[in-house]
Length: 170
Length: 170
DNA sequence: AAAATGTGTCAATAGAGCTGACATATTTTT
DNA sequence: AAAAATATGTCAGCTCTATTGACACATTTT
Image 1 (cartoon, each protein chain N blue to C red):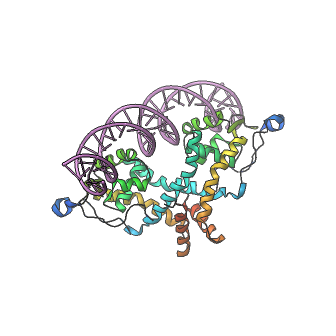
Image 2: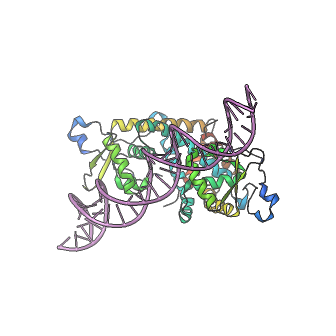
Image 3: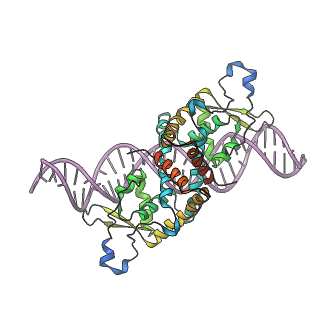
């Protein structure tokens, strides 16, 4: 599954010519202390390709990955506040500010003062924002369906349970 | 599983007061065209927390996520070339250059001219590089083990199969 | 009245990535 | 031998995402 070429882990010249340079390691790192390197890499490759789909769409509108996250969660939970969004994305207010402003200026998201607490800025998608979120989710959904091809409902649940278990508990 | 507050999807004022502003959507995006938004979010949160462990270690040495990837793959496949690494990480040569240079200057990785093709720069970890890669993999491995807690071998295989299926085929 | 909260904004900075262009050494092809 | 291709390195300039710290404003809570 690794994308790089296997085998041919040639021992560097120094190791045979100069005994002092034993510091160079020619043996692949594996099975060290029961660490499963394969699944670590699988997660890396899976996620890398998973985000590549929306990334391609986003460059056309001049947006980036951060815009995707914001537009996704605001669509999933209309009325969420800026504080909710910061908590969800675990980024800082300043990081969010520019991205959110651009989405508001572009007409994908709007702010409404909270009905009870008027300090709050509740966030809602416009129809354009909803359309964008759906367009971004669609290729990701297709990729997931392909990965689950032929899988039972129990398998799907196992994968979801695993992914939930990967999260830091709060 | 969502980190943001559920419920209270209050309909914004405009929607009740001004019929012209129907553009604001108050309903959560879900079940649209059989898209499974939950697993999309699970992947996002799982990966976000998965990389947070090594990130915390790396800030201490002044390195970032890019250094992690490089040191990981060079340890997994000693003797890989710069071209192999670019292919694996799917980044450009220029992006890799700075990161690789820093790792070489810091003594974690060394370059050796290819024994057959002397244009090549084969990459090898030093012992310090191996130690770093292991230190970074360790908390990730613990997180994965926790997520697999009580899972059967078949479940582990199902998860791996799913992750493989998420990759773009080449 | 004072303190806390939710948000917005400013300035400065950093890490990671990009494109395009060009240089060098080496190997392969013609 | 000459030309083309390959592997790598490097330069300049750019973008996006994210950071910290500071401060301001309106509003709510104490």
